[in-house]
Structure formats: C-alpha cells, structure tokens
Image (tube, rainbow, N blue to C red; front, side):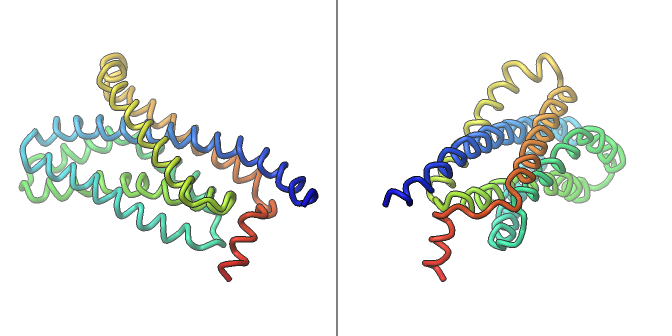
Length: 228
C-alpha cells in the first residue's frame, strides 16, 4: 500500500501543473475564437450587407463548422496512435494563420463576387467561414482526447475544458465590444486573436515535445487493462 502511494504522488504533482497550463491556453483559444466571430460577422455584413439571408448564412456556417469540426476531432482523438496534442497545436496554428489574413481574404473575395447573384455570394460567404470554424470545432475533442489519455478522468476533463473555453468566449465578447474594436479596429483585433492562437500553438507543441515518449500514467494504464 505504501509503495502504491509513493508511485502516484509524483504523477499527481506533475499532472496538475500540466492540466492547469492546458486549461489556461484553452481559455485563450476560446477568447480568440469569439474575437474572430465578432469581427468576421461585422466584416462580412459590411461587404454583403445586413439582411436576413446574409445573417442566416454566416450564423449557419459558424454553427455547422463548429459541429463538423467537433465530429472530425472526436473521430481523430479516438485513435490512440495519433499525437492529439501535436494535432491540436497544428489546428491552433492553422486558425492563427488564417485569422491573420482573413480580412484581406474576405475583402478580396467580396470584391470579386459583389455583383454576382445572392445565391453565389451566399455560398461563398458560407465557405469562407466554414473552413476556419471547422478547425475551431476540432480543438475541444482533440484536447479532451489528450487529457483523458493522461488523466483517465473523462467527466472532469470535458466539463472543465468546456467551462474554461466558454469563459474565454464570454470575456472576449465583452472585450471586443467594450475595448478592442474601438482601440484597434477590425484588423488589429484579428491580429490579436491570431497572436493568441499562435501562442496556444507554441505552448501545445512544447508540451507535446516534453511528454512524447513518456510512459502512460498508472490510472490510464489500469483503465485500459480493465476495458480490454
């Protein structure tokens, strides 16, 4: 009994700071995602106008993209041979890169399709938003997959990650309206969001390098033995 306690103590001491850092970076990820949503909606409405069709298309693209991304991320995270934390870092990097150039892309495509039919502009708007939001939707299941592998606690992991990501989004909504858009404009705000994504990407990548090749925690190994 004494030996078992001494083996689990170092694991708990090392796992808690790791989880805390990942919770914090996921809060930052949620903050950035909401900044994009606020700015992209305003930018697309400025290009195509505010009407029921454009509003419906943008909101639908956001919701569908998040849903599809979540499904894809969940499917990927089930494969234990995949480096989900490295994939999470790559997804965050992809979001950051797209975000940095997003307004220029929106305006270029908007100018090219402005005189086309409402159907064409609607489809283009839908596709512009769908790709990055699919990446955003994939972040939660990927990070959940990593933390479940390292801690073995599914319920606590999902609940905490969802909470911190939603909290980050709430902070971003208030910050965008009250401060960021007024001081930095749309371009400055998306660059701030892009920098946040790249920060999250770097932290996740470094954590992947640190933990790759490390043995699985005892709790996870035991859970796998029971399930098998």
